Length: 391
Image 1 (cartoon, rainbow, N blue to C red):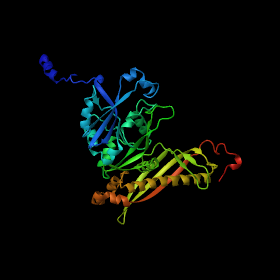
Image 2 (cartoon, rainbow, N blue to C red):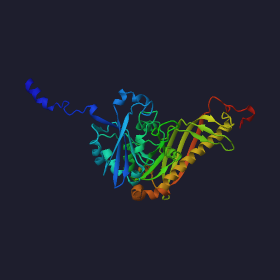
Image 3 (cartoon, rainbow, N blue to C red):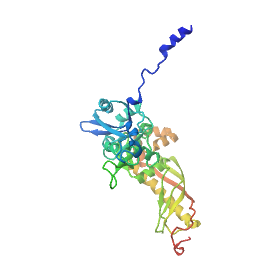
Image 4 (cartoon, one colour):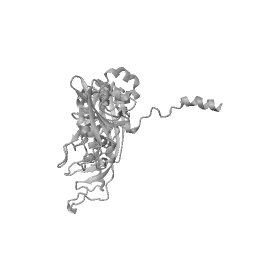
C-alpha cells in the first residue's frame, strides 16, 4: 500500500521541469511607449545588465568613472505593445521579464491620442506590477530611458526615488485604472523632463525630474499643470507630504519659509438650491525654517500676522489649482466619487454630463493655519538690534 501510494503521488509532484533560471531572463527595469508614424507605437525597454555588477559598473553609476553601463535600451515598433514586444523578444537572447519593471513612461504624443489600449496590455499581462509608477514625458519618452544619471545606476531608479520622496504626484498602474474607471473618468500623471547635463558632464548625463503633471480626461491628455498648481491638487487630494511654503507677510520686505509638519484636508460636497458646491476644510501646522524678515515671531502679534499670510497662501494655491482643473474640464480631484457617496440619487441623474456640472461647482475654502514652532532663535539671525520689529 505504501509503494502504491508513493507511485500515485509521483505524477502530482510538479518538480522544477518548467523552471526558468535567472541567467535566462532579460530583466526590464523601465519601459517607454511612444506614438510613431503609420499608426504604430514604439516600445522601448530598459534592460538590466547582470555582468555590470561584477565589472564594478554598479558602484559608480553608468555615467561615472567610465564603468560598464548597468542597463541597455532596446526598441521596436508594432501595431500595439504585444506586436512590438514579440519583435523585441526576437532580438534578445534572454526571455523578457516584466516582474521588476517599476516605471512606465508614456510619450506626450501617445498620451494625447489615448492610453486606454496600452493600459489594457499592462493590466492584463500577468508580469507587470500594478504598483509600478506611471509617468508622461514632456516630448519623447525614449531619451529618458537612455539618459545616464551620475547619482543612480539607471534613470528608472531616479524616477522611482523622486516619486518615493513625494515630489509631485504618485500614481501607480492600479491608481490610474481606478481613476479612469471611476465616477470622474479623469486622471493626472507626473510630467517628466530631462535636466540638461552640467558643465563637464557627458551628453547623456541628464537627470530625469518632475516638472508638474499631465491632465487626462478619460484616457487622453488634455493639458498640463505647473509644479505650483500640482501642489494645490495634492492639497485637495489630501496627499501633500514633503513640501515648503514661502510667504510674504503684509508690509514686510523679506519672506518666511515654513516646512509644515501636518495637514488634514476634508472635502465636504453640498447641494443647495440645486447648486452644486464644495467646502474645502484645511487644518495645517507649520514650522519656521527660515525668517528673512525683521519680525520677532515669538511676539504674539507678529506670529498672528505670519499665520494670516500662511493661511492666505494656502487658500490661493488651492483655489488656483481648482480653477485650473475646472478649465480643463477634468475632475482629477475625484469629486465625482465624493458627491456620489453623499448624494447618490442626484449624482446618478447627472452622471453622463458630470463634467458640465463640475465646471460650474462653486468652491469655498476654509483654512486654519498655525505656526507651532518658531525655532530656537527668537530674533532674525544676522540683523542688528535696532532693525528688529517687535510688533
